[in-house]
Length: 196
Image (cartoon, rainbow, N blue to C red; front, side):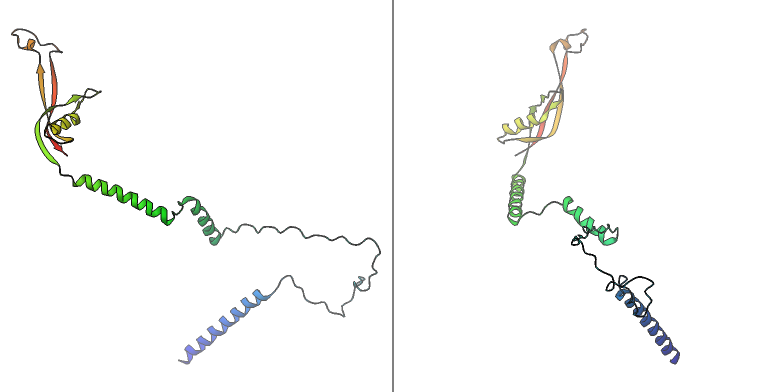
């Protein structure tokens, strides 16, 4: 036990000496010099009180140079400050409470409209409506599904099932006649649609 007390005392004295040394460095002002002793020889230089004052024009006032901006410190705190300055230009500006409420009301209205569209009952109908040819030649079965739903009393529909059939001219059925490329064409039909 006495050995631990001695180690504690040594550690305390060491830390106290270090703290005293650090404090003395902080308190010391390097710009202030030691006072000159009065008995020091003058070495041929007269003190300001012994020098004669020359008579001439009044001395001009010398203005101190403008303050110099401190050099940029590339430390951690400076870099964090730069990050905050950049983040203000990157992040969007905050909306006022009124703008936020208006935005929320518009979103709620849109959500309500989409929910009401979903709430409408959809009915599946069957039948046969021709699909028109689109500009690129492919069948447009949306128009066929709409016609199928309209024939059942609904407004519009989405095609669920289609059917294709080949329609040929009567010339094809003549015995011994060869089939030519323009004799038959494929027609598409919407056979099942989801109506609203």
